[in-house]
Length: 77
Image (cartoon, rainbow, N blue to C red):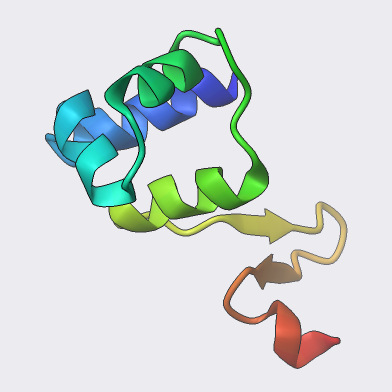
């Protein structure tokens, strides 16, 4: 599933794999592997891809609706 999310973010930003890979300083083949489920990205790479595509990762508690992001987590701990 994460492969589809990564591809969606990239295409919404209107970047091809080569352009995004260059921004992230990774090989295009590595990014392709993430999008085709050939390999699994680390959480840090997912976060970098989201940031490069102007997205933010948000964890939302289903019951309380509390939201935690990578930007505000250090303030909550």
